[in-house]
Length: 507
Image (cartoon, rainbow, N blue to C red):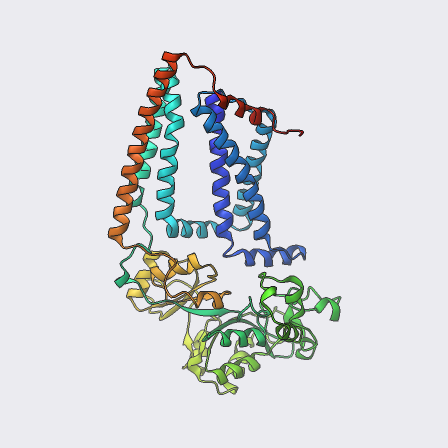
């Protein structure tokens, strides 16, 4: 029974550790989750803070319990878990399980992000796992030498040996693109500003675009809708609720589709106050007083206004184009109106990165200078020049294949340095990011290893871990023999059971 509870404590610790890892990986895409929750509940919250705090509390408790349990085993003392600890362990399992189930139901795509992260961090995870499993040898050796049942001893040893062997050879089956020679490292990916510079100014506003240009950005990514009277304007969400003060101006129309408003109505809305109220990226402290005043004056920009600015600054623009509802007067002509708006500004056509698939052939005839970008993977006989995909949609092998065939790749949305570094090593052409001002300062990936150096580290780590395991089993055997010879049955470490059996003290 004691052996079972030690195993339970260890497995729950491992479960919470995995969940902690997942919550940290989710931070790259958490803004999408925050937006979705707002659309569903009307509540804005940075949920990454909630997830990480809860995960950290669970992991801290399970870590402490595991360490004390292991120490008791090492000192040949019985493990007596108080019922409160058993309840808390069950609570940890239930809470993490609910988190995983919820993630699988509502945000399944993030499992692909976790897979990408495992590939990016595999060398470090391998070394950490090797030393973690080798440290476990002290506890297993204690059980192995103490247990009198030969079948149980053999089973413990067999399972442990298989686990260790699997870890020792795991790098053969896992590769990270950042295990690469410095001379073979691809060029740094270009960075496209996602809705401008949304960490420094309200998304899809002129201020956001200006901040992007000030930071050195050369490509602006945005979203375009067509108003009820045929004016293309910038807006990401279907409704205007999240990024304007529509509740104050049109309180009974806050859930209407943005395309149902005329341009005169849209011009009445403020598109900046929400940024100060909600602080979506936690960057409020970096704003100057002048920035705050400018934020409060932001309006919804028209596409014409944005194109003219791009023309003046000689920067490119790429955008998603939303089709209006079926009863909209421009439901069928929204592409034509958008292209006409662009051409009427006389902007250089090569600055337009055309992403929408609707009526692409007609667009190519009207504006042959537009650079055609495709939002899908290439098919067998495709001759695509450039693709725009989510970063989870292309494997490292596909990225390198596209690169070899001179197909430009833009992957979105990449906010964290670890992910940017991973894609840099893989060889992507560009990424779309909310954090342009942060990623632009990276002069090299946050890590990359020469394959020969990694091979040396791998072999040394495995050899050291193996010697440590052998040492643990030999030393535990000698300790057991000494205890048997001297008849030692009591240790001061018995007092650790006070914590395990009585979880609360009154001092």
